[in-house]
Amino acid sequence: MKAVRPTPVSAVGPRQAKAEDASASSQTKSKQRVADHGEVFTPPWLVEKMLDLVKGETERIDSRFLEPACGSGNFLVPVLQRKLAAVERAYGKSEFEKRHYALQALTCIYGIELLADNIAECRANMLDVFASYLGLDESDELYRAASHVLSLNLIHGDAMTMRAADGSPITVVEWGYIGRGKFQRRDFRLDVLTGMAGFREDGSLFAHLGQHEIFTPTDSYPLMAVRELAAADVASVAQVDAAGEKE
Image (cartoon, rainbow, N blue to C red; front, side, top):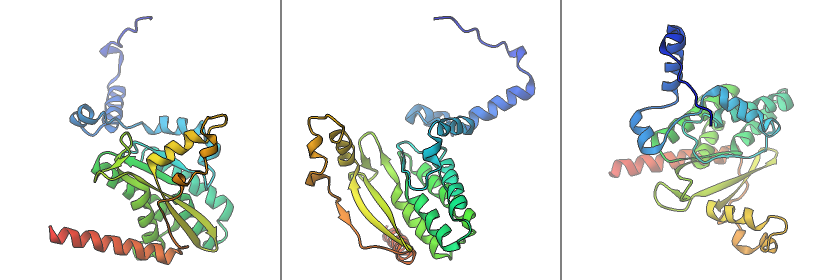
């Protein structure tokens, strides 16, 4: 292996040094978090280059993305922005279609994060991008519906153990947009889904198990409109508030 000489300090100008320091600091929150959790954030320029490797998928409204260590959304926010740009191109002339296909784009993005402050920040960042695109405020039902989706799709847990922060198995919600403003929800366990992917590989000894009953959803729900999703968000927030008051 060829040795790489370190760049002499004198060869780096003050502006460049400051820029490099700022870039390094933006990739970490603290040295302690790096030591404890290996937390280092991918810089935006590299995120864009990586997403360009799957450009077609990032610009497809119904393609699904899962980031198993999503942090505050360094990857997921740009994915959402690309999907919303696709919504605008396809449905920008129809307010009804634009609103509902934008929500579909949001439902197809998933993240798991070990640290509580990061997942809260990720949800807030994603909601801000979604609301800004559609010009929503907190009183809009679509804003509340999006908040509910993000509370389910962005999970506080450990992707390695496939357990949520409370120790329960991580649940992944599959959303389907049926059209005419109706969404379908089905819940799956992440550990079962990852097993299913292996079973369905062509030529696998277990390929015939792809439709086995163990791969059925843990829960299925009636079709829901934005209003029902918004109501579910209000109910879940009230439940959290009530639990906090008891403590």
